[in-house]
Amino acid sequence: MTMYRELSEGPAVVEGLLKHAAAPIAAVAQSIRGRDVRFVVIAARGTSDHAAVYAQYILGARNGLPVALAAPSLTSVYGTPPRLRDALVIGISQSGQSPDIVAVLADARRQGAITVALTNDPASALAAAAETVVELSAGPELATAATKTYVAEMTLVAMLSAAISADAASLAELQALPAMMREALADGDDVADVASRWADVETCAILARGFQYATAREWALKLKELAHVLADPYSGADFEHGPIALVQPGFPIMAVATAGPLLPDMGVLLRRLRNDGARLLVLSDDASLRALGDGMAVPQGIPEWLAPIASILPAFQFAYQLTRAKGLDTELPRTITKVTLTR
Image 1 (spheres, rainbow, N blue to C red):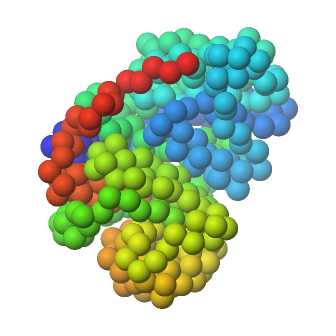
Image 2 (spheres, rainbow, N blue to C red):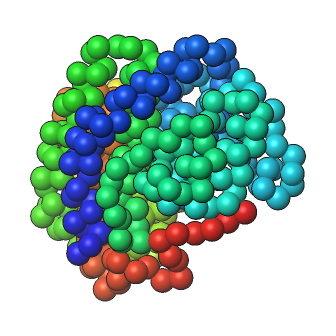
């Protein structure tokens, strides 16, 4: 039950960050405004890499900043780090221990870039390598699968976007986020029922667009590491560029589709897939899309830029319940550990 307890702590973790991380995030935003920052590079692995994908959309759409995901081996193995002097370089890591992520931050700082570590361990090597450290403040995370640290990472990215824009409306929307997250967790029994009906799934595609693409990637990771489901995440648009040929009657597809300009496109795609016989599970705030197959609800009224922080919670619940339905261990997935060191 450790994982389930920890994912349920997500709203409280976000509440804490909104109170205590505002000052260090504001300092980072001031540094960005004071320098000619032309782009952002984010170094991360695993779940944290999906927080970086979220940052690509949020900092690009709301702040006009191009965001690249680092290729850490260029620094840690090949010794050919890219030129980062004019960048904001962010390292995201729950443990702050992976040598390749540390190497990117250390080299970027040597070049004179603005460097920021987002980590749950302020005494970690990553924290030492960065100019500025912003703590996730999630408390101990004992389950192997990261949950509350993921929502903490995304929340800090969202707070940074709001601080850069100095938008009062965005700050108000952030303050309402914990309540929305609690609402997203409220249908746990319904999620368990859905998971029991999907206990036979061994492979699937997971689709989303825009801000929610990070949710598709993170949901797929949890299904792989916990439930041993070969889940392949796609942008809905990319799925139409070839992989859709996989679809035949009964082919399992999970999707995340929430309010925003891309919702109509996702609706068209999901209806096409249903007509082709796909087996659908839809995580959405739109009842008509949930009705296309099995459905899991996301609260209505969440601003699009914050929706992934709430939407991932029922996805985590589903991964947990599916793992239980398959008779697998939710706390100690086979062959992986809490901290993974790569170079």
